Image (cartoon, rainbow, N blue to C red; front, top):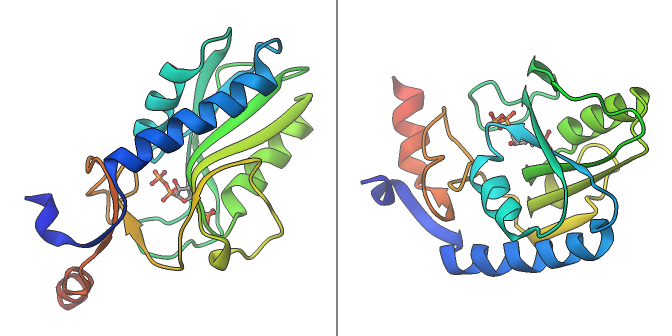
Length: 184
Ligand code: PRP
């Protein structure tokens, strides 16, 4: 059903599985003795963080923040809103921020600065998708799954008007979906 709305599959299920394993092995090398706090930024991070955590074989803690910047549309507003904050103190901790996508970079920049201000020892960013063409701030994620072109993508956590997050792959929507929506 959901598949009918998809134009192109940009990152397949099999590709995602390979990417997650590669990222996990890099992160394991860097963090296996650091007991980091892995922070997922809801809601987009859910499939990615859940797959990634299962591949990380060392001591770590997990927490979540609910942050949003798109507010339902297809472009980032730059206005980063914290809907739910962390329940864990970050002072002195090594923090890994887990994202589904870094686009304009504003979400990660805002959260990263906030956690450093709260006293985190280090804050690094792992993202499944990097869209450097969307960047409006200077920010390079520390661990990048794959780089994608400047297209609006959905699936594997990413939504359009809160839908499509449950697709097992990342793809582009058929333009007709936006056109129908804008006529409503
Ligand atoms: C998306 C995505 C990232 C952010 C990236 O979240 O999950 O958190 O936007 O965009 P940026 O680099 O331009 O800041 P969104 O705000 O749509 O919330 P969601 O995770 O609940 O979908």
